[in-house]
Amino acid sequence: MAFVLDLANILGGLLLAIPLLRRLPNVGGGLERFTDRVARWSWLIGIIALIAGGFFFIVHLVDGHIWHFEVVGIAVGVLLTWEKFTGRRILEAPGPTEPAGRALIIAIFGVIAILVGIEGLFTPN
Image (cartoon, rainbow, N blue to C red; front, side, top):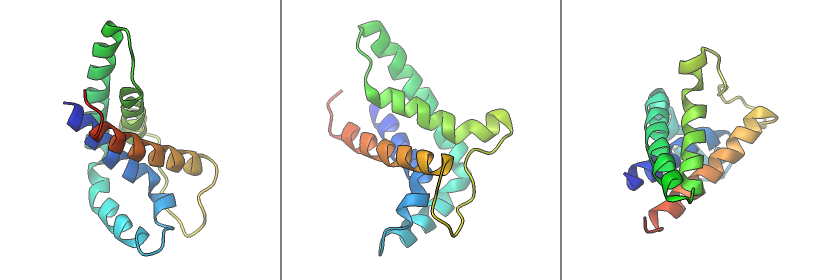
């Protein structure tokens, strides 16, 4: 289950961070094509992140020590499922301009989620 949370953090982070990652030379184009294919399943990745993050949040809350992995997973899940839950769009379609404002904050959080997911792969649980 920890692997599922880490994978959801990585994939969700990629979907959230694509406005920044597509600016990387020789890498951004490939990542953008990958996220375009995965984007239609973003709500499912969000649900998986919510379930796995919530499970570990409850387990570690009972143990008395909450980790950042599950908090980031819950946040990724909320951001990816926001449109399904509220009907309002939080993730804007990427435009030709630099990301700014809310899009920049979400993209930076996406990079953090990728790093947390990769860290979780190498952390024993």
